[in-house]
Length: 179
Image (tube, rainbow, N blue to C red; front, side):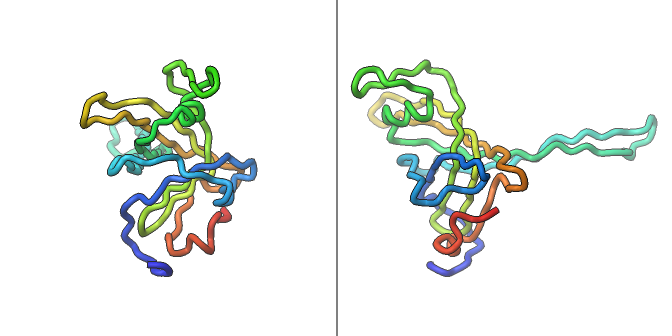
């Protein structure tokens, strides 16, 4: 499907992360790495409308003013290969000896740049985002322990957009996007 602009976005090819740049731009692809193996059908994006407050004159049903709060965007996914290295990087772990990692078991927030790349359609680039990671799963024959990640876009540098999307067909020529 190279070069084809399709309006249908589906499937998750990979999630790629990198360091946040002060410029508010996305890092170059060669400076980013795949976050891990994402559990099938666990990735999603949600956008919820912000609350609004209506200011009304007494006994008048028509508002004089409506104050809208911003909408919120979140990306959620589960990582299958919960390695000590990922625990160290995303859960605030510290090296204990040569290979072991200790962590407090509490949620920490890590800032990264994120690229959510689907199989087709449009990709989403987030120059600066917070990621909160927790463990979950069953220790059974059919269960698997995963790291559940919640990614929230944060304000990028002045004048830069917090979320950027483009057709996947433009990816090779237009990444990183200049916002």
